[in-house]
Length: 349
Image (cartoon, rainbow, N blue to C red):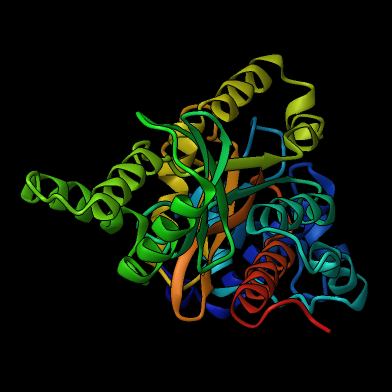
Protein backbone atom coordinates (compact mmCIF):
# COMPACT_ATOMS: atom_id res chain seq x y z
CA UNK A 1 0.00 0.00 0.00
CA UNK A 2 1.11 3.57 -0.75
CA UNK A 3 -0.08 6.93 0.54
CA UNK A 4 -1.57 7.58 -2.92
CA UNK A 5 -3.96 4.68 -2.28
CA UNK A 6 -5.58 6.75 0.48
CA UNK A 7 -8.05 9.58 0.02
CA UNK A 8 -6.87 13.10 0.79
CA UNK A 9 -8.91 13.03 4.02
CA UNK A 10 -7.36 9.74 5.14
CA UNK A 11 -3.89 11.07 4.41
CA UNK A 12 -4.56 14.13 6.57
CA UNK A 13 -5.88 12.08 9.47
CA UNK A 14 -3.03 9.55 9.34
CA UNK A 15 -0.47 12.36 9.26
CA UNK A 16 -2.14 14.06 12.24
CA UNK A 17 -2.34 10.84 14.28
CA UNK A 18 1.33 10.01 13.69
CA UNK A 19 2.50 13.54 14.54
CA UNK A 20 0.42 13.71 17.73
CA UNK A 21 1.41 10.22 18.84
CA UNK A 22 5.11 10.92 18.25
CA UNK A 23 4.83 14.08 20.34
CA UNK A 24 2.73 12.70 23.21
CA UNK A 25 3.45 8.98 23.26
CA UNK A 26 -0.19 8.23 24.07
CA UNK A 27 -2.98 6.72 21.95
CA UNK A 28 -4.75 9.45 19.98
CA UNK A 29 -8.53 9.96 20.02
CA UNK A 30 -10.70 11.68 17.41
CA UNK A 31 -11.36 14.68 19.68
CA UNK A 32 -7.64 15.19 20.18
CA UNK A 33 -7.12 15.20 16.41
CA UNK A 34 -9.96 17.73 16.00
CA UNK A 35 -8.51 20.04 18.68
CA UNK A 36 -4.81 19.80 17.90
CA UNK A 37 -4.68 19.90 14.12
CA UNK A 38 -5.80 22.25 11.38
CA UNK A 39 -8.29 19.64 10.16
CA UNK A 40 -11.81 21.04 9.93
CA UNK A 41 -13.64 17.71 10.06
CA UNK A 42 -15.99 16.92 12.94
CA UNK A 43 -14.88 14.43 15.61
CA UNK A 44 -17.45 11.95 14.24
CA UNK A 45 -15.98 12.18 10.72
CA UNK A 46 -12.47 11.86 12.10
CA UNK A 47 -13.52 8.84 14.16
CA UNK A 48 -14.97 7.14 11.08
CA UNK A 49 -11.82 7.79 9.05
CA UNK A 50 -9.62 6.51 11.89
CA UNK A 51 -11.77 3.36 11.97
CA UNK A 52 -11.20 2.90 8.22
CA UNK A 53 -7.45 3.38 8.70
CA UNK A 54 -7.51 0.74 11.44
CA UNK A 55 -9.29 -1.71 9.15
CA UNK A 56 -6.58 -1.05 6.54
CA UNK A 57 -3.94 -2.00 9.12
CA UNK A 58 -2.48 1.51 9.50
CA UNK A 59 -3.72 2.25 13.03
CA UNK A 60 -4.26 0.08 16.07
CA UNK A 61 -5.39 0.53 19.67
CA UNK A 62 -3.81 -1.00 22.80
CA UNK A 63 -7.24 -1.76 24.30
CA UNK A 64 -10.91 -1.22 23.49
CA UNK A 65 -11.43 2.11 25.21
CA UNK A 66 -8.15 3.68 24.06
CA UNK A 67 -7.41 5.93 21.12
CA UNK A 68 -5.38 4.88 18.11
CA UNK A 69 -1.65 4.60 17.46
CA UNK A 70 0.28 3.90 14.24
CA UNK A 71 1.20 0.37 13.21
CA UNK A 72 4.48 -0.40 11.43
CA UNK A 73 2.58 -0.12 8.15
CA UNK A 74 1.08 3.19 9.25
CA UNK A 75 4.56 4.56 9.97
CA UNK A 76 5.76 3.22 6.60
CA UNK A 77 2.97 5.00 4.68
CA UNK A 78 3.73 8.17 6.65
CA UNK A 79 7.48 8.00 6.02
CA UNK A 80 7.17 7.18 2.32
CA UNK A 81 4.65 9.86 1.40
CA UNK A 82 3.25 12.00 4.19
CA UNK A 83 6.00 13.32 6.44
CA UNK A 84 7.32 16.85 6.14
CA UNK A 85 10.88 18.09 5.74
CA UNK A 86 13.22 19.24 8.49
CA UNK A 87 15.70 21.95 7.58
CA UNK A 88 18.95 21.25 9.42
CA UNK A 89 19.52 24.26 11.68
CA UNK A 90 22.67 26.32 11.94
CA UNK A 91 23.19 25.06 15.48
CA UNK A 92 22.96 21.46 14.28
CA UNK A 93 25.43 22.16 11.48
CA UNK A 94 27.89 23.79 13.88
CA UNK A 95 27.59 20.81 16.24
CA UNK A 96 28.44 18.43 13.43
CA UNK A 97 31.34 20.65 12.41
CA UNK A 98 33.06 19.62 15.64
CA UNK A 99 33.70 16.25 14.01
CA UNK A 100 36.26 17.90 11.74
CA UNK A 101 37.82 20.39 14.14
CA UNK A 102 41.08 18.42 14.19
CA UNK A 103 42.50 18.59 10.69
CA UNK A 104 44.96 15.78 11.45
CA UNK A 105 42.24 13.41 12.61
CA UNK A 106 42.24 9.91 11.17
CA UNK A 107 39.21 8.44 9.44
CA UNK A 108 38.19 6.38 12.46
CA UNK A 109 38.25 9.46 14.71
CA UNK A 110 36.16 11.51 12.28
CA UNK A 111 33.52 8.79 11.91
CA UNK A 112 33.20 7.92 15.59
CA UNK A 113 32.96 11.61 16.51
CA UNK A 114 30.32 12.14 13.81
CA UNK A 115 28.22 9.25 15.14
CA UNK A 116 28.63 10.54 18.71
CA UNK A 117 27.35 14.00 17.77
CA UNK A 118 24.53 12.43 15.73
CA UNK A 119 23.54 10.51 18.86
CA UNK A 120 23.54 13.72 20.91
CA UNK A 121 21.47 15.64 18.36
CA UNK A 122 18.84 12.90 17.95
CA UNK A 123 18.86 11.47 21.50
CA UNK A 124 19.16 8.04 19.89
CA UNK A 125 22.00 5.58 19.38
CA UNK A 126 24.50 6.66 16.72
CA UNK A 127 25.92 3.90 14.50
CA UNK A 128 28.78 3.87 12.05
CA UNK A 129 30.49 1.10 10.08
CA UNK A 130 34.10 1.70 9.13
CA UNK A 131 35.13 0.61 5.64
CA UNK A 132 35.94 -3.04 5.02
CA UNK A 133 38.73 -4.34 2.81
CA UNK A 134 36.54 -4.19 -0.29
CA UNK A 135 36.15 -0.43 0.17
CA UNK A 136 39.68 0.50 1.31
CA UNK A 137 42.23 1.26 -1.42
CA UNK A 138 45.92 0.96 -0.64
CA UNK A 139 47.90 4.21 -0.59
CA UNK A 140 51.19 3.29 1.00
CA UNK A 141 52.92 1.09 3.56
CA UNK A 142 55.88 1.89 5.76
CA UNK A 143 57.98 -0.64 7.68
CA UNK A 144 59.74 0.61 10.83
CA UNK A 145 62.37 -1.45 12.67
CA UNK A 146 61.35 -1.81 16.32
CA UNK A 147 63.76 -4.45 17.63
CA UNK A 148 65.70 -7.42 16.39
CA UNK A 149 63.38 -9.46 14.13
CA UNK A 150 60.39 -7.26 14.91
CA UNK A 151 58.94 -4.68 12.49
CA UNK A 152 56.04 -2.23 12.72
CA UNK A 153 53.95 -2.10 9.52
CA UNK A 154 51.99 1.15 9.06
CA UNK A 155 49.34 0.69 6.35
CA UNK A 156 47.56 3.79 5.05
CA UNK A 157 44.51 3.67 2.78
CA UNK A 158 43.47 6.42 0.38
CA UNK A 159 40.56 7.33 2.65
CA UNK A 160 43.01 8.14 5.45
CA UNK A 161 42.43 5.03 7.53
CA UNK A 162 45.62 3.86 9.25
CA UNK A 163 46.33 0.32 10.44
CA UNK A 164 49.37 -0.57 12.57
CA UNK A 165 50.58 -4.17 12.83
CA UNK A 166 53.56 -5.79 14.51
CA UNK A 167 55.28 -8.17 12.08
CA UNK A 168 57.80 -10.79 13.30
CA UNK A 169 60.59 -11.59 10.81
CA UNK A 170 62.88 -14.58 10.34
CA UNK A 171 65.91 -12.36 9.90
CA UNK A 172 67.02 -9.04 11.29
CA UNK A 173 66.50 -6.25 8.74
CA UNK A 174 68.04 -2.80 8.85
CA UNK A 175 65.90 0.32 8.48
CA UNK A 176 67.60 0.97 5.12
CA UNK A 177 66.46 -2.42 3.82
CA UNK A 178 62.96 -1.80 5.18
CA UNK A 179 62.82 1.56 3.40
CA UNK A 180 63.76 -0.07 0.08
CA UNK A 181 61.08 -2.73 0.58
CA UNK A 182 58.48 -0.04 1.41
CA UNK A 183 59.32 1.92 -1.76
CA UNK A 184 59.04 -1.22 -3.89
CA UNK A 185 55.64 -2.24 -2.44
CA UNK A 186 54.23 1.28 -2.68
CA UNK A 187 55.00 1.35 -6.39
CA UNK A 188 53.94 -2.23 -7.07
CA UNK A 189 50.56 -2.29 -5.31
CA UNK A 190 49.20 1.25 -5.45
CA UNK A 191 45.46 1.68 -6.16
CA UNK A 192 44.55 -1.93 -5.25
CA UNK A 193 41.98 -2.65 -2.55
CA UNK A 194 43.50 -4.27 0.54
CA UNK A 195 41.81 -7.55 -0.35
CA UNK A 196 43.18 -7.44 -3.92
CA UNK A 197 46.64 -6.66 -2.52
CA UNK A 198 46.59 -9.69 -0.21
CA UNK A 199 45.39 -11.99 -2.98
CA UNK A 200 48.06 -10.74 -5.38
CA UNK A 201 50.85 -11.18 -2.81
CA UNK A 202 49.79 -14.76 -2.05
CA UNK A 203 49.48 -15.59 -5.75
CA UNK A 204 52.94 -14.21 -6.56
CA UNK A 205 54.55 -16.08 -3.70
CA UNK A 206 53.05 -19.31 -5.00
CA UNK A 207 54.22 -18.58 -8.55
CA UNK A 208 57.72 -17.32 -7.69
CA UNK A 209 58.97 -19.83 -5.13
CA UNK A 210 62.34 -20.06 -6.92
CA UNK A 211 62.87 -16.34 -7.38
CA UNK A 212 66.30 -15.48 -5.98
CA UNK A 213 65.91 -11.69 -5.92
CA UNK A 214 66.43 -11.10 -2.18
CA UNK A 215 64.63 -7.75 -2.10
CA UNK A 216 61.66 -9.15 -3.99
CA UNK A 217 61.44 -12.21 -1.74
CA UNK A 218 61.69 -10.17 1.45
CA UNK A 219 59.13 -7.66 0.19
CA UNK A 220 56.58 -10.35 -0.58
CA UNK A 221 57.14 -12.11 2.73
CA UNK A 222 56.85 -8.89 4.77
CA UNK A 223 53.71 -7.79 2.93
CA UNK A 224 52.20 -11.27 3.39
CA UNK A 225 52.75 -11.01 7.13
CA UNK A 226 51.48 -7.42 7.26
CA UNK A 227 48.25 -8.34 5.48
CA UNK A 228 47.88 -11.78 7.04
CA UNK A 229 44.89 -10.79 9.17
CA UNK A 230 41.76 -9.87 7.27
CA UNK A 231 40.08 -7.18 9.40
CA UNK A 232 36.33 -7.37 9.77
CA UNK A 233 34.16 -4.32 9.29
CA UNK A 234 34.13 -2.38 12.53
CA UNK A 235 30.85 -1.18 14.00
CA UNK A 236 30.82 1.63 16.53
CA UNK A 237 27.69 2.28 18.61
CA UNK A 238 27.48 5.61 20.41
CA UNK A 239 24.84 6.52 23.00
CA UNK A 240 22.89 3.25 23.26
CA UNK A 241 21.95 4.27 26.82
CA UNK A 242 19.94 7.15 25.33
CA UNK A 243 17.61 4.61 23.74
CA UNK A 244 17.37 2.48 26.88
CA UNK A 245 16.32 5.49 28.98
CA UNK A 246 13.48 6.61 26.71
CA UNK A 247 9.94 6.05 28.07
CA UNK A 248 9.15 3.64 25.22
CA UNK A 249 11.44 1.12 26.95
CA UNK A 250 12.27 2.41 30.43
CA UNK A 251 9.00 1.18 31.97
CA UNK A 252 9.05 -2.27 30.31
CA UNK A 253 11.81 -4.49 31.71
CA UNK A 254 11.23 -7.28 29.17
CA UNK A 255 11.49 -4.90 26.21
CA UNK A 256 14.56 -3.30 27.74
CA UNK A 257 16.36 -6.60 28.23
CA UNK A 258 15.51 -7.73 24.70
CA UNK A 259 16.74 -4.42 23.28
CA UNK A 260 19.96 -4.64 25.27
CA UNK A 261 20.67 -8.11 23.85
CA UNK A 262 20.03 -6.80 20.33
CA UNK A 263 22.63 -4.06 20.77
CA UNK A 264 25.09 -6.64 22.10
CA UNK A 265 24.78 -8.69 18.88
CA UNK A 266 26.91 -6.42 16.72
CA UNK A 267 27.28 -9.03 13.99
CA UNK A 268 23.57 -8.83 13.20
CA UNK A 269 23.60 -5.04 13.38
CA UNK A 270 26.44 -5.01 10.85
CA UNK A 271 24.44 -7.22 8.48
CA UNK A 272 21.46 -4.88 8.72
CA UNK A 273 23.61 -1.81 8.08
CA UNK A 274 25.37 -3.55 5.20
CA UNK A 275 22.03 -3.54 3.37
CA UNK A 276 22.31 0.25 3.24
CA UNK A 277 25.44 0.00 1.07
CA UNK A 278 23.27 -1.35 -1.74
CA UNK A 279 21.19 1.84 -1.98
CA UNK A 280 22.23 5.46 -2.61
CA UNK A 281 19.07 6.61 -0.80
CA UNK A 282 18.57 6.92 2.94
CA UNK A 283 17.37 3.61 4.40
CA UNK A 284 14.54 3.56 6.95
CA UNK A 285 13.68 0.25 8.62
CA UNK A 286 10.64 0.39 10.89
CA UNK A 287 9.88 -2.09 13.66
CA UNK A 288 9.61 -5.62 12.30
CA UNK A 289 11.39 -4.56 9.08
CA UNK A 290 14.65 -4.73 11.06
CA UNK A 291 14.35 -8.55 11.16
CA UNK A 292 16.35 -8.53 14.40
CA UNK A 293 15.01 -9.93 17.65
CA UNK A 294 14.62 -7.18 20.22
CA UNK A 295 14.29 -4.41 17.61
CA UNK A 296 10.55 -4.76 16.95
CA UNK A 297 9.90 -1.46 18.73
CA UNK A 298 12.81 0.37 17.08
CA UNK A 299 13.49 2.07 13.79
CA UNK A 300 16.78 2.48 11.97
CA UNK A 301 17.65 5.45 9.76
CA UNK A 302 20.95 5.10 7.88
CA UNK A 303 22.80 6.43 4.84
CA UNK A 304 26.03 5.38 3.19
CA UNK A 305 28.99 7.77 3.00
CA UNK A 306 31.51 8.02 0.18
CA UNK A 307 35.01 9.00 -0.76
CA UNK A 308 34.64 10.71 -4.12
CA UNK A 309 32.07 8.42 -5.81
CA UNK A 310 33.04 5.21 -3.96
CA UNK A 311 30.80 4.04 -1.06
CA UNK A 312 32.91 3.35 2.04
CA UNK A 313 30.48 2.56 4.86
CA UNK A 314 27.24 3.45 6.62
CA UNK A 315 26.27 5.96 9.32
CA UNK A 316 22.91 6.30 11.04
CA UNK A 317 20.79 6.04 14.18
CA UNK A 318 18.57 3.53 15.98
CA UNK A 319 15.78 4.69 18.26
CA UNK A 320 12.15 4.05 19.19
CA UNK A 321 9.62 3.78 16.35
CA UNK A 322 7.99 6.82 17.93
CA UNK A 323 10.53 9.28 16.52
CA UNK A 324 10.38 12.48 14.51
CA UNK A 325 11.26 10.84 11.23
CA UNK A 326 11.58 14.02 9.18
CA UNK A 327 14.23 15.35 11.59
CA UNK A 328 16.05 12.02 11.91
CA UNK A 329 16.20 11.57 8.13
CA UNK A 330 17.49 15.12 7.54
CA UNK A 331 20.17 14.84 10.22
CA UNK A 332 21.39 11.43 9.02
CA UNK A 333 21.49 12.57 5.38
CA UNK A 334 23.32 15.78 6.29
CA UNK A 335 25.82 13.88 8.48
CA UNK A 336 26.57 11.36 5.72
CA UNK A 337 27.02 14.23 3.23
CA UNK A 338 29.34 16.05 5.64
CA UNK A 339 31.49 12.95 6.14
CA UNK A 340 31.59 12.46 2.35
CA UNK A 341 32.73 16.06 1.80
CA UNK A 342 35.44 15.66 4.43
CA UNK A 343 36.77 12.44 2.90
CA UNK A 344 36.57 13.71 -0.68
CA UNK A 345 37.69 17.33 -0.25
CA UNK A 346 39.45 17.41 3.13
CA UNK A 347 38.55 19.42 6.24
CA UNK A 348 37.01 22.89 5.82
CA UNK A 349 39.48 25.79 6.06
